[in-house]
Length: 241
Figure 1 (tube, rainbow, N blue to C red):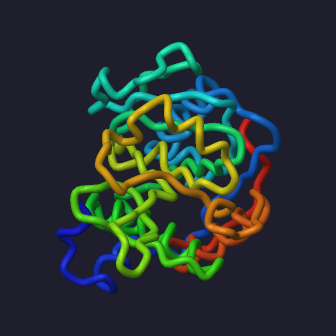
Figure 2: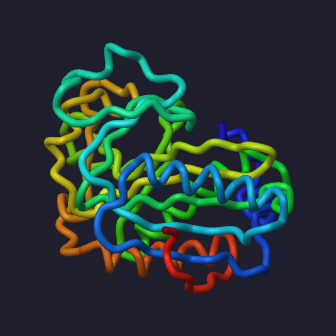
């Protein structure tokens, strides 16, 4: 969807707003049910101008989520971790320790009312974040998320997904968001067909798998720098309860 955008600078300019976005980071694991309840309430409050926009960084315990387009056959190990049906777009996704989830609640009514531009901006946010670690993240037609080309000269194509995107827009307010693989257990992804993609040469990777000795704190700093480039200034706040 975002690949239809004609000009990167024009697309990104629609998303920018000088109003500071609240930025919160939760310590420890946050249950999926609790996170969804917070997002639902916050999105509704943003629409009524009762709350500010928010980016919420957190870590979930191991779990799988099924987006609105999930194919039941893509759940390979249904008893491995809890499985949650979710209102975000997309298919099956894994969340767990070592993965930084960023839930992004923005008022798109003030940011151009352009869903293509918004998804493009989320991709750019991840790409700019990876650039902080000297990693080239790339978009791929027909494949949601951000990818790293690991093809060796003369070898077969190998491309690994390092970040997933899944969002919901309600009354022009976004919720859900992105998931960046920092140092998760990559074997946990084998219980699903991630995002329905099961083709030779395509896999999943992380910063640590790519040889970057990064933790969540390092990723958080890079995410914040990149978010401010693409979207808005940020303001520290306490995490939701």
